[in-house]
Image 1: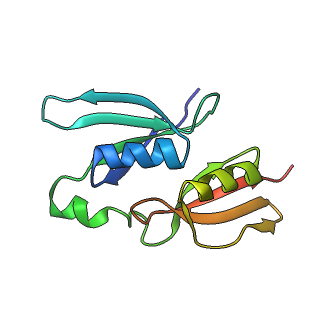
Image 2 (image 1 turned 135 degrees about the vertical axis):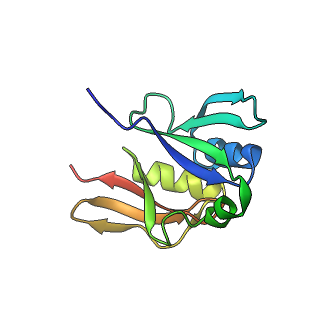
Length: 130
């Protein structure tokens, strides 16, 4: 069996990223370990009982990486958060201050709305059809 285990998300600050992903999006902090070079190995996952890839939150090093924070996909939706209850998660995330860029819409593939993380990366919150 093979699967994608982690996707790196370049961030400005570990602690503010952890707070956003755990408090606003409801992820769980899976790992937070110091590394010899002064960086940290920080992994967040969508939550208890969730499956799929986690996010490795990596603090930007140098100008080239710092320039990518918030724009890792050139303005496209780059991340997809599936849910089994769109209304519940949309309401909780909105109450937590998450910025949705559109109203929820019904598509043949499910209920979806685009939101942005604290850095401006675009995400789909999606309850798949069926």
